[in-house]
Length: 189
Image (cartoon, rainbow, N blue to C red; front, side, top):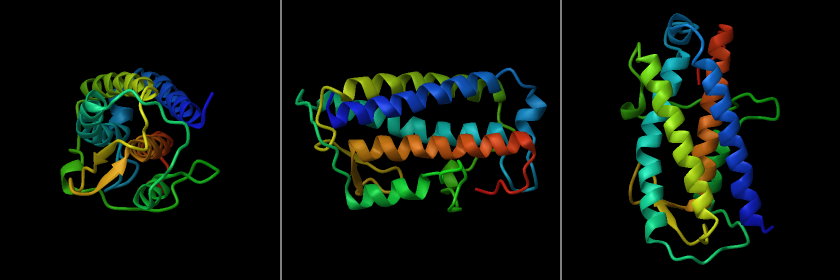
């Protein structure tokens, strides 16, 4: 198995873990999922809605790029400078905690009380689509495919960096959701 396959399979494992956790959250009360730990801090439902905003952009963009790509499997993973930077911004520390706070773009700030069932259902559908895209990417060289970022279309990252950034972003907000469920006042991410 080559480095690219390992990379994609590891992130597929992360996505399957995210799906399992989200499905378990779907059994919790709406009140618990919409409870903000403190004023200005996001509830679980708000975290999910925020992640859905990114999925609505990145998943169709990745799919379109894969549809145009030629079947030329890659073997090594090469991260670009910008990709490395964005991935590091999203990564949790070794204890699963967020190390760098940041503001979300205005278009990705969730409403106060999102519809819990709709957001979780949409999120799980997105995750299954993401698993499919990770599988499809095994037949391409993910270093050669460039994906425009959501913040500025002129800025493009390698597909491998995009997958890593996107999934690390999800892991970050899943950690935020876990803290919100515990009522942790240090949730401001």
